[in-house]
Structure formats: C-alpha cells, structure tokens
Length: 278
Length: 305
Image 1 (tube, each protein chain N blue to C red):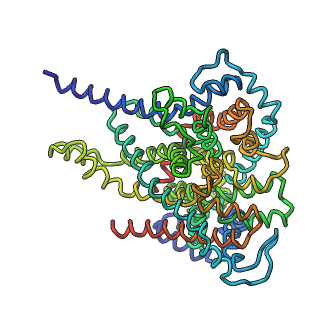
Image 2: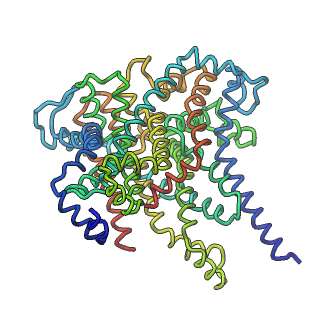
Image 3: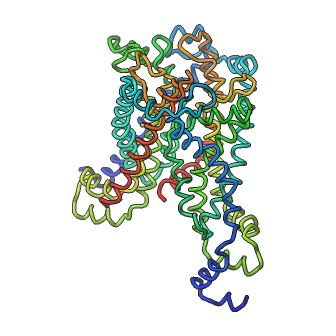
C-alpha cells in the first residue's frame, strides 16, 4: 500500500517534472543561440545541432570591434540613462501631485495620461516624425530620449501614484507642522522612502528604452547614433551571410537585459504584479 | 498651529483644500510631465487623428482639407481588411494560448511548497526581451537549413514536416504567433501566480473538505477568484495582439504575399512611403479599434461582476 505521504511526494515530483520540462522548452531557444554564437560560420552552416569544436570567442570580438557594436552599445546606454533620469524626475513629481493633492483637473488629466497606455505604437509615429524634423531633432539622441520618456510616463505616473497613495496622511501632516513645504516633504521624506518603487520604475524605463526600435528606426539614420536594436537589424536578414556575427549580435543586445533581470529579479516581478493588481 | 494639529484629520483636510483652492503648486508639480507627455505622446496621437482629414504627402502636413478621402481609400483597400483580419486571428490565438498556458503554469507552481521562484524566473525570461531579439532568435530557429527546428525534425525522422516556416503563406502567421507567444506566457504566469497567492487559502480548505477534485477546484474556485486578474491579462493581450508590430515586421515584414500583414505593419509601410494620409487614417482606425475593444471589455467585465 502506498501511504498518503508517498502519494503526496509523487504528486510533487510529477509537478516538478512538468514545470522543469516547460522551463527547458522555454529556454532551449536561448541556449541554442548562445551555443551557436560560439561556432564558426562553417560549423553553423553544417549542422544546427552540433556543438562548437572549440568555443569561438573571436565572434564576440568581431562583433564588438569590427561591427561597431561597441558604438551601438554606448548609444543605448546613453539614451537609457537620460531616459531613466527624465522619467524618474518628472514622473514622480507628477505622481505625487496626482496622488496627494486636490486640484481641479486632477482626475481628468490623470485619465488622459492613463489613456496613453492603450495607444498602439503606430498611433503617434507620423506626427512625431514630422515634429522631430521640424525641431531638427532627427538624428540626435534627444529625439529618442524625449520620445521614450514620454512613452514611459503613463506607466511611471500610474505606478508611483499608487505607491505614494499608500503613505498615511499623518506623515504629511507631521511634516507640515514641522514647517515642510510640499516640495521639501516630497524630496526629503517621500522620495527616500520610495527607493524600492523608484528603482523598479527605473529598471522598467531602462528596459523599455533599451528594447525600443520602431521609433529609433524612423528617427535615427546616422550609423554613429544607432542603438543596439538598430545595429542588430543591420546584421540580419536571411541574405546576410555572416551567420556567426548576426547571432553574436543577438546575444550582445540581450545580455545586458538578462544581467539586469538576474540582479533585480525580485524588483522586476514585484513591479510587474504591483502594476497589474491595482 | 497647535490648535489645527489637534483637529480631526478630515476637517483639517477640508480646511487645507479650501485655503488653497487656487494654488498653483499642484500644477507646477505636474507641469514637466504633462508637457512632455502632451508634446511627444498625446499630442502626436491627437495630431494623427486631426491630420488624417488633410492632404499630407511630405514631411509636413498641409492645410488642404480632404474630409474622409483617406478613410474611404483605406476602407476600400483589401489589404487593410486583410491586415485587420490577421490582427483578429492573432488576438484569438493570443487570448487562448499565452493566457491559459500562463494560468496552467501558475496553478502548477502554486501547488508546490517550495521551488516556485526558480521556475518563475526561468519561465519569465523570454518576456524581458526586445521584439527585435525575440524576432531574430526565432528567425534563426525557423531558418530553412541552419535553423534548429528543421534540423530536429529531420533528425527524428519527420522530414516531411520540415519546411520554410516563414515562407509558406498558410503557416507564416502561425509561426510569427509562436514567437509572440513564447515571450508572452511568462508574463501572464507571473501575474496569475501573484493573483493565486492572494486567494484566501480557506476557500481551498473548504473545497477540499467537500471532496472536489483538481479540475473542479480549478474551474469552480480558482478561475472565478482570479476574475480581475483575467481581465487584466486579457486586456494586455488585446493591446499587444491588436497592435503587434516588432515580431512580424522583422520576421516577415508582412509577407509572404501579405500573408502575415497586420495593421501596424500596414501603417508603417505607408509612413515609409510618405503616404501620410493613408498612414494617419489607418493608424486612427487602429487606435479607435484598440481603445474601444479594451475599454468595452473592461466595462463589460466590471458590469458583470
């Protein structure tokens, strides 16, 4: 006879098997791309399933130095840093007002901002492109920073607003009695208490900017200003013959995001669920 | 000051509000964000709608009012309906596959006493990638001879299944959907898992005492308790499937023979040709469809609750 305990353990083993296989299937594409990035062109052409005879790290050197990926990487980092700083500053300032101040138009303006989360990517492209030409911002990093920051603001404000709303009224009153102005309360008290939410938001804004390419495609033509996704697109396509280089480019583009994910995993998933369940 | 501090909170709040009725302080706080959003996000969306009624064939729109001309052209264009049809097919698949796969995985994970977070991290990984990365990973998987998919099929003796996954019009849309789904179910799963953890365990204890089995528990307890989470997850699918761009644009560009064309790619093609009238009109229709679908869906779910 099998005891209840054994049954229960068998049940867990069964679930582990299911989940482990699901994880494996999910990750096979990633492993395969990583392994393939270490093969020579000849090996890639000969068999998709073989392992590299000896790992070719030269592919990474070729992509990094020879194919300008160092430049693209730097551009992505610069655009990312400016976007994040802008989103965090203006987003949290506004979220504070929306969360804790009464003023005519609060709800209306907030709703209009919230609506921004539902627009498809293509909804603003035409006028955005036209305006950037007029402002002479095409082929500058500013075009990307301004557009990406404006794109992340709805999520930023929504998230920070619900976070700021969680603080008790008494906190603000105590600060008021001590003679704090709105801005002082915000900078000295609220922001330091909000570092977890701010860092989550920063990660999201950074990933958004790092991953974006549709607007970059229209707004950037100069090779020296291309971000990683654009650089990657240069080395792709079914007709592109340097397989090793294009596959290595995928890893170079994805790796920083993977590293950020591994380090800030908890933040990431918490931010995601906090944003969704409120 | 002391007197006001001992007053009840509510009355004080009212007093503060009244005293500062015309204060500009809140507006100063929201000004930077609102102007940035208005100029580079909301404004351009409104401009898309506005200028879709004007002639616009170059960088800058003209003041030449053409009424519904662009809309009539779009609504008569079989390629527009073709693209919209693919969005709808994409949506139907997106509401089924990533949502229910995500729920299934989350339910399995919630059963485990420990080890959840490891699976959660692994299964969520593809969701962090850029559309470009997702598309190129799958382009290589589908590659006719250097790709792993055909090679595996040949190795296990299913040669007849090996084919041009992105080149065959009948299956190309499905192939792009697989790439989209790969990066989506982890997302639903994480959200479902958080929702599951918020369900009161007593409900399950009661159900267990009533002797219900796994599937009864799933459909009569879990799914109804996750109502709001479902609404959120499905809304997200409406937004992403009706607006899908990156994966399709890179994998097929809408081809072969428009077999995977979707509205975003259709809009983008017109922007690329500087046919801004058609681009803005079709983008407007797309935005209206998406916003209407999402808001109607949310309202409908809230009314039924």
